[in-house]
Image (cartoon, rainbow over all chains, first blue to last red; front, side):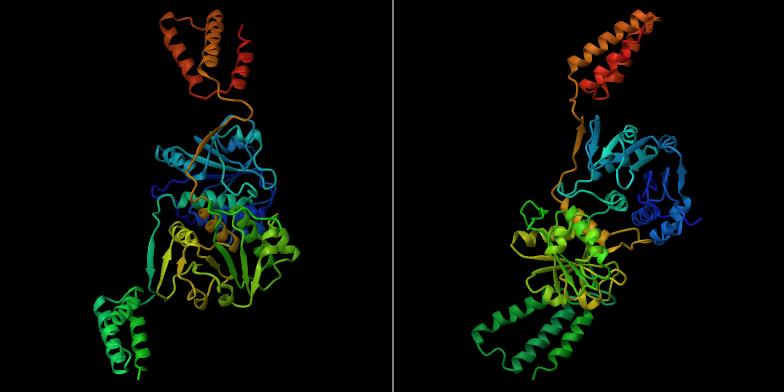
Length: 246
Length: 246
């Protein structure tokens, strides 16, 4: 069976449990969001619709493997039998004593449990109502996704996506790359040769007609082209441009 | 007109520009994701369908105000007239020299521009194809959402949601709260009184029948109830429980 790439380098990741999901298409979209974020194990508690229906498969757009591997349970309790640590996502604060974390904080605790060899599950409730208190009771902690208080409702797959994305990028450092396609950034020698021939062209064209300003004008020109990480092919383009300087 | 709460404390946030969006329902779902993340200004370039259609309004589920305020343009160029800094989201790397950032890094640059009073726009392409090279050319930088390379396709509103969510939480520290509903965590005096009466009950019931083990058994009991941040009302519950100890 096709293996789904896992999220964490350790090869361990949380199990997604959908409690009483209503619509097959949403189960499919959850599978898609899981695959986006390298999550592989899905459990369904009393799903109203078939998670292998055409709606579910098309909703998963390419993540059907997760639906095929998903296990269905007749109660949340039975779905949690082999789990050591449970986090329940909820939008509303209830009259219940529970720790509530934002995803980033919750993930740090999840990672600790996973590295201890424990199984961790994330609970997501039905589309309309969310998890009920009887579900939340079974969780070690609650997770609340901090959103605009004026409009915090997310659909099921979006809640899974935010939990999954924040988990997926946990170990990723903010990076910056210069994408240069098939070309590479020019070295300073290539740049200097171009700037020299540009100055030469402009000199001949009478561009530097105030001797006292010439040096500054040349500095400004060099600065313009030095700032912009020109690639070798872009410099070729500029050569052909200045070839039209008469 | 109803004002949409803004994302950053400074009251400034990026403008979302959808380039040639195909489906009205997706435009609506983008508005919903924007409102989730406190983003308010939406611009549409050559939308295929009407962003005020019933499909769009229902897709926005409560964020119609963003659709009503949205402006439509006949070209990306005209949509960018008043913008100083443009980031284009893209899934594929192109043959073009551009800086590419992950969202967290891109947001740091966006914040700098906004605090300088500059307008910043995020570009999102059509559902099926994404942005074309002619669109990307107009961007100062590209943003690539790092996802499972084996399955990185996101739908339009999910891409907006991840950009918006990572922007929205930029200033939020990972927090942990103990949610106790209407009750408060018991103080140590309440806890001690309860543990004393528990021990008293168990003593009378003959629970401590090995004198040499009594101290350790009492320590264990105290530890169980001390670990769990009992609230005052939970302690009341436990009192009624132990009242049944004969």
